[in-house]
Length: 242
Image 1 (cartoon, helix red, strand yellow):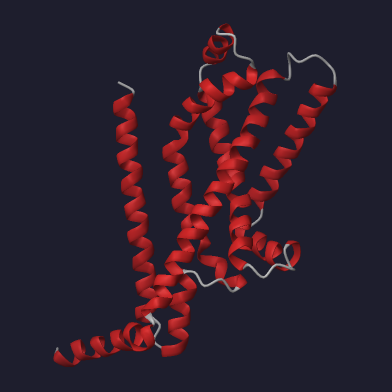
Image 2 (cartoon, helix red, strand yellow):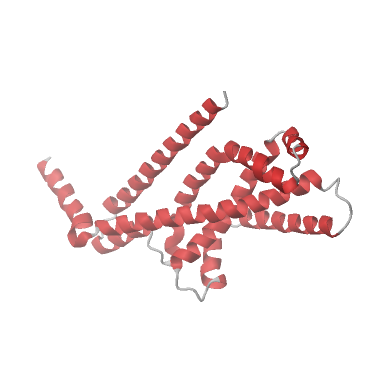
């Protein structure tokens, strides 16, 4: 028993204490969180725009008069549908490699490229989340806004979008959790995130168990923490509805 404890202790020191190797995990965690939050912000921005275009098309195209405005809306809706279909149909790691080695090949900022790639990928999923939320709002809300003198844009901004955001917020936070786990593949573009940090330790100590287990444990703790936040938020939203 004593030999086993001594072996674990020596491996712990080798993997985390010597040469301050624990910093690879800490620095990697910071990169992972920066990448995830940055990508989510981009994804939300893209998702809101795409969802508004698609829901506006679905709700108003039948009643719009022929003209440039109707043609422009049909064109934008087609572009948005292509974007959602393509992004959701291609694995995120392939999108990441295309962004790094082709689209932004001249860039030396791996974090920026990774954030943009994951943000664009997340935008397609967030768009469908927001689209579902907007479509779930009763049509009477739009009529109520118009009766108050708001135009379509003002009604969407002040009445529909805030209600839809409340509906989709728990799902949006779950998308954040999924996005955080998906970022584990950024090592393909030489970005030193949490997973890559653990792999660097493994490569230097030739001891895979502890660094990889530590990375897995950190991911698990993060997921449990954010899942707890989602559950708490869902309970608060249900309470506020009564």
